[in-house]
Length: 459
Image (cartoon, rainbow, N blue to C red; front, side):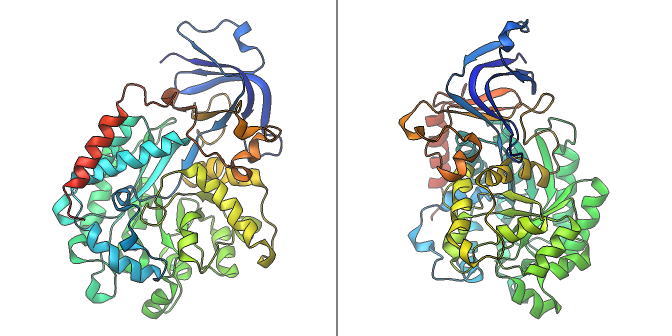
């Protein structure tokens, strides 16, 4: 793979977690999948043969965003007024929507994944974790395999969360029988996927995370065996925590969710939870002490309406933080860049009620880059530096939208927000989106294929 020289960048945000992680008026040179150099006038040196040169004057370059929680299959139930959950609890809403999810076909999972990843890429996301917990019996067991196919088609760096539900509705879960698996089925397919796809090497494009859906919808043995498998295979763990289920877990097991998972061993630096908006201060300290991370999904908070996740407290206690879109049934888009702005504004809204100050705007970009890389155990992404993966996106700031904002590139996404697709997105040194197109792919054709798959369902 030849390299690319981004010539004359107005700014390169190298590491948003650092107060001075911005370089001005520099070039950035890639070589194959990696960043080779960042500095002034790199074109004065001898460039490798075949290097493409891009005029990047006026461009801000950012590390590629890392999405740490999503449900791609829900892309096919977006913008549905009949599924509005603003008047329901999370558990009541799941009772309503799970029967619809149980009717999806294998092709639906492929095309909904392609749709979600395409939107993510357009808005600067270069690594996506998806929590695929829906395995209808009629759709078979090759759903995650098809997701890897979709990721390869687009050039997305993909971490597959193989989820599952094992507790029947008759025993207190919200899962229809058509979506149930046994613990043995779930663990066996996790092992198959790890053996078939998981790549722990630098610049890996495929990894697998053992991700039972949520404690309220699984037997205890499912979580125990998940821990055993993940630790044996050296992969990460993920689940939903702290989104309204703790009273149900307490009634069933005599303790809230965080204590329950800690007792099982489903905690640690190789583990991250989604949501956590209902956790107590003591529970946040537990997460920090164990090194367990949190994927904060800000946009569903608008719909829940009861709690705004206490990000200032999490940050103050040292909880490892990333950002996620969450599923389109509770967000309706796959735009992680928009989530950076939402996350910051939500915290400002409730700042007067918090014990800790709102983190700096650039910190929210850090959650979506360095923080997300940390949650996924990646040391090769999340920042722009020589030797790291060439995962980045570019915004041309020579537009009216950015007049008066260009003095602080690291805060731009959180404070101002970016309301349009990127000018370019690169993953592993390959340009996967530029000038409003996916190079080598026909977006209209992909959209028509997805619509045709959706039309096969009676939704």
